[in-house]
Length: 107
Image (tube, rainbow, N blue to C red; front, side, top):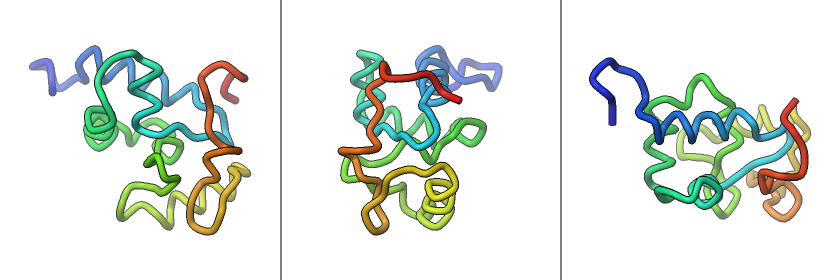
C-alpha cells in the first residue's frame, strides 16, 4: 500500500485527512470513515491506520461497537478522558460520541 517512495497512497491520504478533522471528544468507526469517503471498507481503513495513523488522532477511529483496537485500550481511554469523549465503561458511547463529518470543525 505504498507508492514506491514510502509515502501513503492517495486513499490513505484521504483517510488520514478525514481523521485529522474529527473533533476532540468525537469518534468515527472504521466503517464510518469508509462510508464517509465513499470508498474502501472498515478493513482498508484499519490497514491505513495501522500503517500511517500514528501522526493523526488515531484514538478517534474505533470499532463500531465503541471499542478501541486491541492493545491500545489504555492509551485510548486516557485520551478520551482528556478530550471529554462520552464513554460507557471501556467503550465510547457511539450514540453521543459519533461524528458524522458535518456537525462541527475540529479544534
